[in-house]
Amino acid sequence: MTKEEQEDDFSRANAKLEYVFGKRADIFIPPFNRFNLHTIEAMSDLNISLFSTHPDLEQRTINPYKSQTLVVTNNSRLEVSKISDQKALVYHAPFFVSFLRLESEGVSENELVEESLRLIDESIAKYDFAQVRLPPSDFYQVDATTRKPINEVDDLRFQYLTKIVDSLADRNIRIASFREIYPHSPNLLFEN
Image (tube, rainbow, N blue to C red; front, side):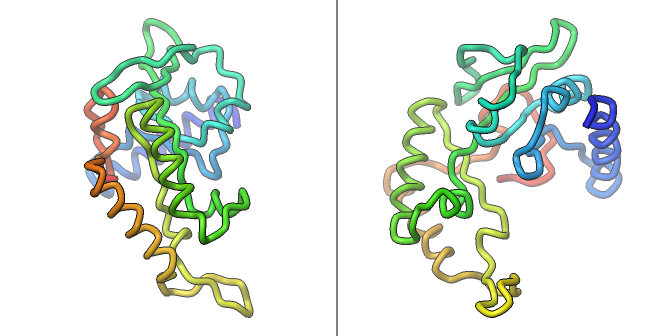
C-alpha cells in the first residue's frame, strides 16, 4: 500500500478505536508482520510511536531511517526510525517468541518451552526485554478431521505457556506492558 493509503487506514482505525474505547492506538503490529517503508513513514506522520514485527522481516525491508545502534529508553534498548527532525520517532520492539511461528520453523512440541526460553534470554541480552506474542490462534484446538479451529483451548499449549511463565517468575523476570519499554506514554488499548 502507498503511504497515503496506510495513513488513511491508520486514521480510520484510530478514529474507530477513539469512538469505541475513548483511546487511540500508539502501537502498530502489522498483520502477518508485513510492512514497507511507507508504513514507518505513515506511523511517524500520525504519531504512532511503537512498531513491532519479527526481526527477520525487519531485516528484509530496507529502512534508511532506522538507527544502526540501539537507543537506550526507559527500561530497554531499541532501534528507532527518525524520518526527520520535525516528525515523531518510531521505536522498533521486535518479537522473538510465538508458538505457531516456532512450530512453523520446525520446533517440536517437546522443544517448544526450551526454545521459547532460549529466545527470551537472547532478546533480553540484546534489548533488555523480550516480547512474546500470544495471539488466540496459538491456543485454540483444531478439529482433527476438518483442520478448522474449534471453540476450545488447547490444554497442552496452555501448559507450555504456564511452564514459561513459571520459569520466568522463578528467575525473577517480570511481565510488563509495552508502556514500560519506550519513552512515550502511549494510550494503550490493552495492557500486554
